[in-house]
Amino acid sequence: MAGPELFTVDQPRQLLVEGKDAKDFFEALVGKLRLDGFQVHNFGGIKEMRKFLKGFCAAPGFPYVRSIGVVRDAESSHQSAFQSVCDAIKNLGFAAPRSPERGTGEKPSWSVLILPDASTPGMLEDLCLRSIADQPVMRCIRKYFACIGEVAAVPKNEAKAHACAYLASCPEPKPSVGIAARAGYWPWDHHAFNHVKQFLQAM
Image 1: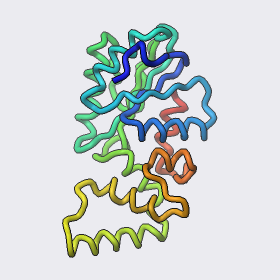
Image 2: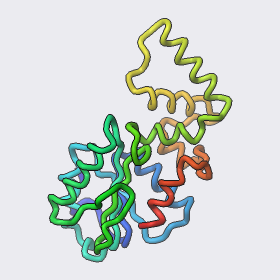
Image 3: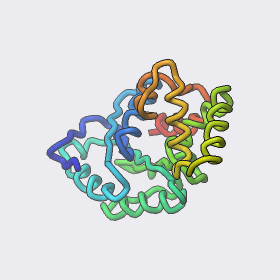
């Protein structure tokens, strides 16, 4: 786990995300949008978030931060995920946002983005799959998993399995959605990403 001595805080807009895959994904999107003054950090897993935030707020440069966005997966409950982040923010002595994707308006302003959207259970992979749902290859992937279901146990995490299958079908396969984002494999202009882009631009 990174402590304040292991990372720097040197940009006015700080984005804290869940996992290396999300870090790769959001760095790629920030670059695509040509947003200045951004720094993206991986806070690790959900259980590591509070420890990371404590170190983050103690890091040199934190007093100059203007806006902080925290991004995590909804998993099984969007509301529980949002409340978990808000509780962690309050535990630091800051006001937490009243709803997802809206900042507190203070300095620093805190905002929370739960994936894949503001109301649905799921994760980053679900968001990415929405952007390619209409591509012909996805029909093949759905048939593939239907066939697997007839002869073996299907993967427990359907979204991750479908995303991996899609990336394996690409001319130059990538091992994760984050690395695929860096390679430009996700259609950033698709409306599935609109609320995510708006969240970053609002920061």
